[in-house]
Image (cartoon, rainbow, N blue to C red; front, side, top):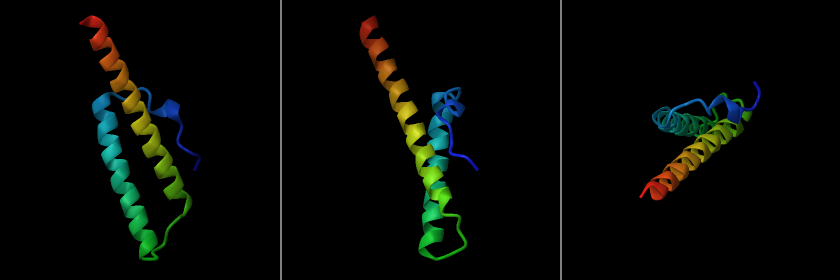
Length: 75
């Protein structure tokens, strides 16, 4: 399994990104819970999930900032 790529999420809408952020945060919680309870876990999944979460949040922030800038220009 390779690291998630930023290119894979660019085509998502803002609503889909928000849903993916919630889903990814839940997945990260479950992975951390597994680690804390010493259940069977592939340690690289935590790294991949954290990276994916960061990518989703970055993309959403960039889109919202560009939306705010266009609204300021239109005023």
